Structures are given as C-alpha cells and as structure tokens.
Length: 200
Image 1 (cartoon, helix red, strand yellow):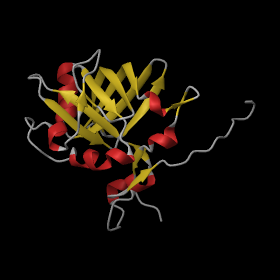
Image 2 (cartoon, helix red, strand yellow):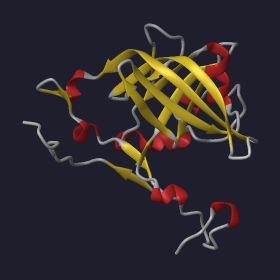
Image 3 (cartoon, rainbow, N blue to C red):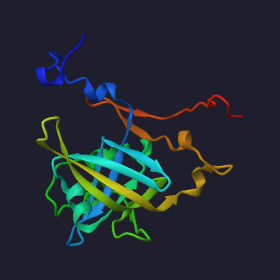
C-alpha cells in the first residue's frame, strides 16, 4: 500500500500515529496569567537536545497548555507512568480553562523550585522548563496549520531517588507510558542494552 496524505489513505482510521509509535507522553503542567493550574497529556512530545537539555511538545490547536506556556514562559514535564495512567487519562478531559486538572484527576501536586507551575507529586521525574519559542507550524504551501510547537529548556530536574539504581535512572522500574495509535498505549517494563560499534 502507498498513499499520499493529501489524497487520503482509504482506511477506517489514520495509520500515521500508529506507525510513529510508541511516542513519549508529554504530561505538561502550566499556570495561566491568573495563576490557575492546568495539566494535560500531549502525544507529540520528545527530548530534542541534551546539552543544554531541551524538550518540545506540539498542540493541535492553541490549547491551554501551549497558550499558558506562551503567556508565562514556563511549563513542567511530568513523567507519565503505568501507576499514574488513570490520572493522566482523566487530565486529558476537555474542560474550561478555570478547571484545575490536578483536582479533576485527584492528583497530588508539589511545588517547583524555579518555575511557577506545579508538578505531579507521584511522578518519578519532572522537568522544570523555560520556554524558548512557540512556533506556528506551516505546511508545504506556507499555510498555518493551527498546530503549535512549544520548545523549552530544562532548568530543573526532580527525580524520586527510589528510582535510581547505581546512579542510573531505572526506566523499567518507573514503567513509563507511551502513546501508540488510535486509543492504544504501551508501557515500558523491560529494557535491553546494545553498544554502538566501537563502544566498550
């Protein structure tokens, strides 16, 4: 099968997100200009640089997280895990900007040190981020797509030390969630090691 996205795929559901999978979940917390809390998961998220550490998430439409990040210059990435799956899913509800998703999803929050947004207290790790840019994405014809890419630099890192093993963050023990296609998710329960050619 081959298809051009602009001509459609002819399938019952779009395979694009199922092929680019699994994807890390950007569980993003922000505050708006009035100090109201917001928490929402984004399936288009990833680390984009290690030095300095930077992450990015994409919002389909200027949703609260992207709008708040642009207005305040700050956001927090919270690691979504299998143990927090229900709360993560509940925080995805489409609600008014004045609804606090921490309360909606019954998630305890914790303060950050360098940014105003709260973090998910039970998450094994969280990144405090300062916004570098918010880009309005365009297509090949130069038309705006109503998708927005938020780029942030990590200025503070919280790690639950119970997930550290000999100085390594134990990814498998944290059991991170990832987004697959359609309504499907995956969880990391095992990892394996491969050395690159020339490494010892």
